[in-house]
Image (cartoon, rainbow, N blue to C red; front, top):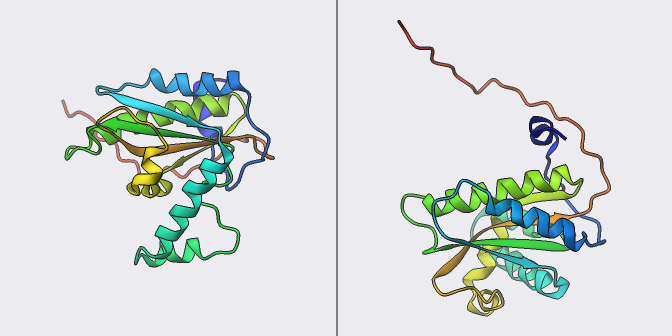
Length: 184
């Protein structure tokens, strides 16, 4: 698959199949994150433990219901809604020092996540960028499950799994792009 084709075919599935992805594919996807254009220290935590992913989901849903945010409350109260989309693999990307005031660490983990999303698409594996479930790590008992190196804070997740769908090229309107040409 060519890079631009991969970009145009990548999508965020609403749910994943329960079948796990292969260890080799998972390693390939996570290692793609290492090649992102980052300028700081980040850590990848790969979670394949269904029970742990379920705990993250349960805590996230409870926090969404009590957030005071009407959209989050409505989502969490939908029957069958799962914040981690039943993904069999969750990768938590954490940054040394957490989310700094300039947003550099968020940029770093987001660039790494994007590489992972594209690698998954190229391999025919579903992927989804997620920030909502990160709120679960504000609870110390959930955060400790990650066994992060000192000073690292979870910022984003990549949800991975097989999907029952094909990767078709999508069309996006380009009505929000402006070009400024140099004046001679």
